Length: 441
Image (cartoon, rainbow, N blue to C red):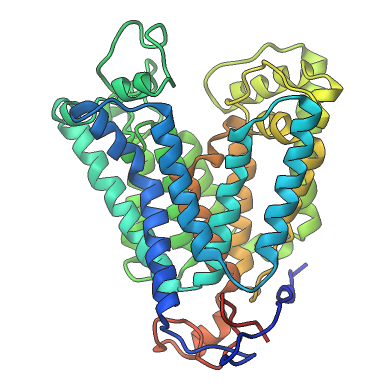
């Protein structure tokens, strides 16, 4: 079944002096949007490395500094997403109202859960407003270049790298690790930066799993998969194959088995995306949840090894220990759920919140059916990642992911194909656009 694009969201109306069907491209606010998008995406990618540098060489860093940087970047995304369309405000208000209800029922506030969803909302709607495909391509290309260069520096000059970026010291300073976790070490790579078992990808590279600007290798592998998906989708992107090669190199350097398998699956599925209807995507995570829970009840598993099968067992073990109030989101649990995105999302937002968030993604409207391929790649990435980690909520990788998804959804691909030499704005001036001072026709 071939998906169809949805009609645009309702607007309040055109501002004085502006056409109801479009706007003059290249206005000052359009330029500001692109600048804010660049700051938000590249800032989300690099700010942890910057704070690590400060902690190593200048001043002590605390978790509050990390939170301030994240809120500033999310604020930039929301500023760039502002428009006269009502969808951003409705989605944000609905989510915040729901979370306030959960907090009232639980008797405690979880600001991290709020932040987890403000990131995709803000960056996605930023992409729908900027709608500059060339900017999206540039940010993808620039991001993977930064990641690869920084990663090669870490791999080939590790001791010099640690002189400037003491990763362990940074995570200890912000409270993410304790001396017990690091066995007393205060200088070095992240605890998963040196895997005790042999590498899965190119074993001759040794046990060093390169983290690059992310400071931990899991995010590096995830980011490589995201960049690969965009380059796979963007058939007319400049330096497309160079970007794909850099993405694979990042995945290999991080020894990211998940990222590597995801890239393969996204490529193999290319001919079939148009055949998978939205309702199928809608039920998949909950079918997966049910199957894993049944497996856990049937086997009584307590977890497994540090691989995909082991994380499957970890999720099964967690699910069997959750009672109904926790599943519904009206109670909290002390279970450690970061190794299972399914369990983490369920315990943070409750079953109804999980369903609503996933439905909002699956049924998100898009302007042209061409966007469905990338949309499907994102769904594959999230479904697979939810089995093994909750890292898809991290701004380090989520900033670029949601921005390019929003861009893909609201670029008019047919007009772009017809007019490849258009101005920075991929749509002509008479095309239907929306922003803070105009409305969609």
